[in-house]
Length: 204
Ligand SMILES: [Zn+2]
Image (cartoon, rainbow, N blue to C red; front, top):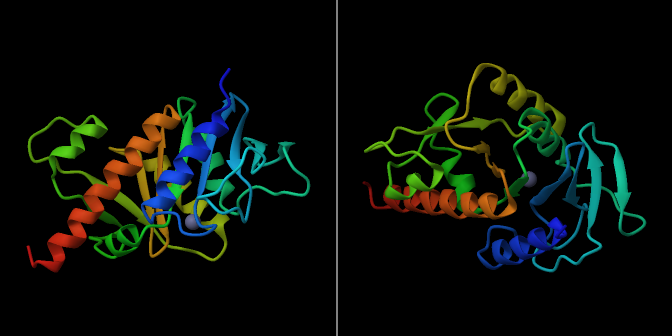
């Protein structure tokens, strides 16, 4: 089986180059099996990830395997855990800290942001004309577990239209069946965010 961390290394390099993962910010994970996933170790530069910069954790957050001692999983691991646990089909979870995600997180109506109805939304398998797609925005609690609890509560009562959530003035998280799909979703949502910021600047 191919090493899923190779996909994460590649995604980190691309997202860093785009300015979506500056320094050590953000985190990337990919499923290993039904009970565990690989996630970036805390404090690693995302543009320069190496094969040892990952930790394998189980769905309850326990470390199963390290490639380097000492290393600990990303501080935001609980959000990834929630998604792997809740959706067995999820194969990768990517979280980046882009400027556009932070700006768009302020464009809320209630606790949701309505996305501009752009053609690229088809990339999320939404085929209606002028699609009305909103994504949830969560408060950026200092304690990550509180963000995860809010998100879990939201998922109890709502089905996400597209696999994207925002944390206010923090970043965006996407999930997909494979690392390739998750990478595609990050690129699509960042395109939409960039458009939305640009449209506001132009007063559209
Ligand atoms: Zn973050």
